[in-house]
Length: 397
Image 1 (cartoon, one colour):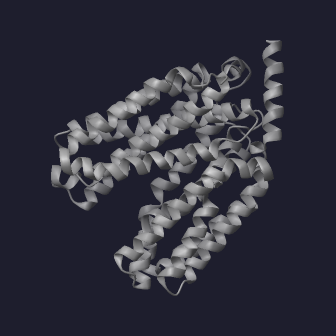
Image 2: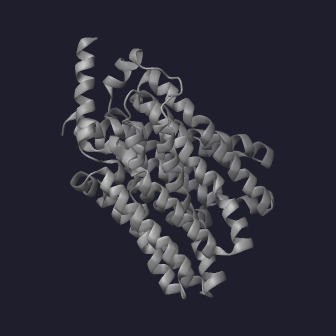
Image 3: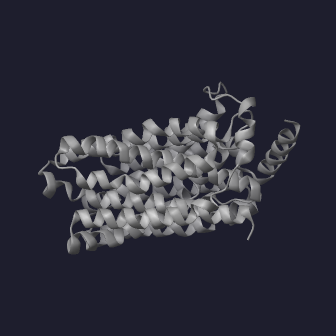
């Protein structure tokens, strides 16, 4: 196994670790009430602080990678994210918890940008798609932490749970750290590029695509069960299948996503995926019974699965924009959607009902369909050409 192949599996595990730590925090949300006696409104504010921490650090992560390269920055933030959950467990009051959550969000967000940039570097070096499977492993990490988290908290308490999650994440990080891929070209080409915000509108439109792709995913995860219960009179155990089927379909097609992109190309994959997502979300809005909605959400999971990985790959392969700058812009704009979406969706659903919400989400998928040509940078042939140009430029330095 050569250096690039080792780097490919190292960055895949980084996605698992990031998802695992995020899942550990998700389990802890339910413990905030017994720990601090806070209301749901306060919990919502605390979650926002976590999100603001991530958004604050994402652009900074891109700047640091311009100076030090993806390998070093990814190592630093992977280690920091592995340990950042511990202060959350040690906090004794909501006031102390606030900065701890900001730091946790900041470290997870910074690691997110760094590992995506590193994955793009590996993708370019291998001349084959890997980002979809990487994002799949993030989902697996999230599921792994969530599935064991409740049991650990119940048996050993919230603090032991946090230390165990952190220990597993730290051990895995230390094991894979030496194998993290070093993108030499990124560091050497910094003198020819700038860390100032690009003037080209393309990268911001790609960020908009990420934004529009993440909101439907967030909406299905957060609100699909509530929709089935409120509008379609589903029982709780039936309603929960909507999210479960969506998640399984999305994970399965993220596993297959790299093969699909290698075979059919990024633009065609985005077009078919966004079209399927839009039609499926529209069908979910028109569903007359829970099972129709569950089938629609399952198809939506297939459509949504590879939108974000391909968009991120395109962001990291824009002409005259460094990988790190492009990635930090796209991730920051994209994850803004997950931060902003939950509350407005609930508010709109309260006034108009969930069918209107899902029709609006279908419209978002339609916009992605129209913007599909912008992901040309994610085409493997384009990445291969850019890698060749970088090697030539490096030789000229």
